[in-house]
Amino acid sequence: MPDNAKLKQARDAAARYGQDHLFNHLDGLASAEQDALVDQVLSVDFEQLAGLHRDLVTSQAGSASRETIEPLRATPWEDFSITERATLANQGMRALREGKVAAFLVAGGQGTRLGHNGPKGIFDIGLPSRKSLFQLQAERILRLSRQAGKTIPWYIMTSEENHADTTGFFKERRFFGLAERDIFFFKQGEMPVVDADGKVLLTSKGRLSMGPNGNGGCFLALAKSGALADMKKRGIEHVFFYSVDNALVRVCDPHFVGFAINQGKPAASKAVIKVQPEEKVGVLCLRNGKPSVLEYSEMTEEMIYSKTADGRYLYDSANIAMHLFTRSFLEAHAGASLPFHVAHKKIAYVDPAGNTVTPPAPNAYKFELFMFDLFPMAGEMAGLLVRREEEFAPVKNKDGVDSPASARALLLDLHHKWAVAAGVSEEELKGKLVEISPLASYGGEGINTALIRSQLGNPIIHVS
View 1 (cartoon, rainbow, N blue to C red):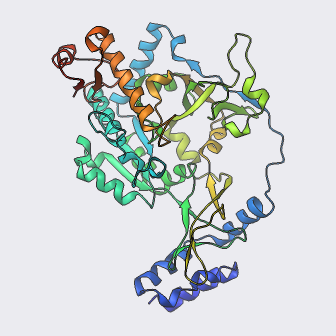
View 2 (spheres, rainbow, N blue to C red):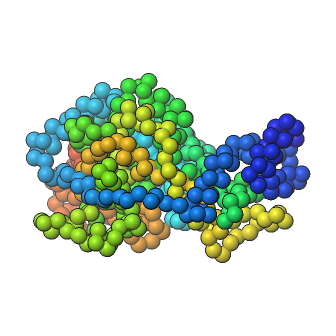
View 3 (spheres, helix red, strand yellow):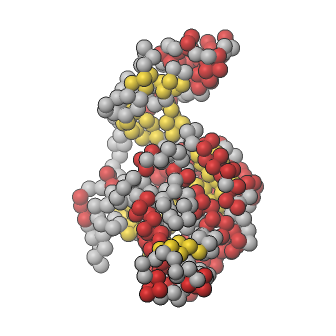
């Protein structure tokens, strides 16, 4: 049974904002469940929640200010000479050798859309090696750390829903060869989910319905968890941000790190050319002269199809969720007050009678922060245009575009090209699948052609 004073405090806080229903089923709960419910209610900022419901649901208030939108053009890597590329790569590798670069992975998502019950990072896209997304990324970090002669610390943001499964997966696999002390797990923040009247939904009789507070919440979580302080203690100066669902992500890519350092701006982003003007992807842009990302839904038809004098689409630098921030920038702005955005979703809930209801249509509102709202605070942001087929294989849909099958095909095709570039002929590889472990090559370097040729009698060539 909860402490009487604590229970009264929770009831009073809820009652002031018309949320008395949260205690409708209190008497039927076990003592531990009652304690958990009281603690959860006390953690909610009901005043903030009421304001968000009023502004974003009831009045649907939006920004009344006029915006000027311009493209933020990313510089193609191919525009640099061979000498310049080498210089930038060396600059990036020097920062890695000096222990100034960390990886920051946002991995709070579940693989539900993929038909996978668990964290998306655990998902196996069907490679011959059967490696998960987490393993591919861990091995790239390990390979690069060995090349640099310095361990790259890895900061991984999970969610309340998948934290235990994620950390358990890493422990079972002995952290993929990385030192446990160099991996820092922490949880993303949450926000209560409300109905059209602003009432907080119950996901069970003793638990509030909560949702992740959006990808923009990653910065606040980075600061609150102590991860930023840990980075400072380690001497980290540059933080490579990326999302879990890219099978080709080059974590802490020295070329990109060197490019960003050379540009001297607080933030830098990688981008790829849109496959077609109608591709539903955000693009790098300038809002009122400040860096941001323009979502596809925000683009007018004129923006989608406008071209430059040389025939390129004006807004063609597609955001692929790979950024590099200076630690000093994150320290200055991680706690900044970002605007919330609202999403209308179908969320199952417990009704006043205690029955679980699965609604046929959207019934609930989630309040989320967007990471792009932090970008303008950088003042300036550099963009680097890279090849989609080498660095971007998203795993978002169960089938078709951006699916495990398409990501697998992209990775195997890239590794086939690496083998050919290393000296193995197309004829020798005809009809064979080639998978090269990240432990053997980070970006196509050091391919062991003798090892590949030793496996030519097999339909699958796996270089580990």
